[in-house]
Image (cartoon, rainbow, N blue to C red; front, side, top):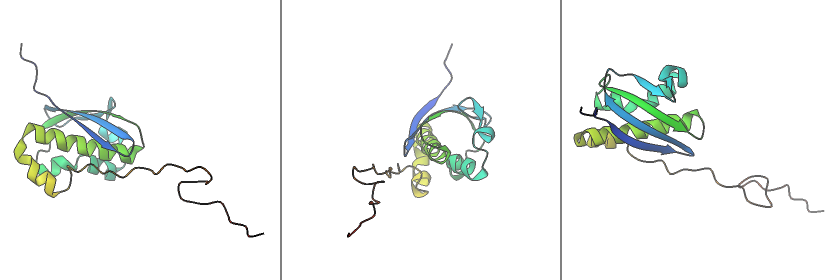
Length: 131
């Protein structure tokens, strides 16, 4: 018996990590064992997460299973986006150019700056008193 073809990639954003499994199918998207509409109820997040399919015109060709953890929903949606884009490149190297042109293969390096000692937040200072 031949194992079904599967493409795997990891996407990250802020503190979120999304492990994405792409399988040829009918377009079902499952995130953390829940339907994508249920997991990302906001249309903007759902659109962002599934953007690589729109750009490469591969809507409905793959079933997607995602394990997302860490961060908030927006960070997870962006991590899913990067994971799907990377998995699509693994499936077909010719999709790299349209995904690169849409800036979907770049890992956003911005992270939260750490809080410093002697300050209430990363950059905010305690109020200065002259007297």
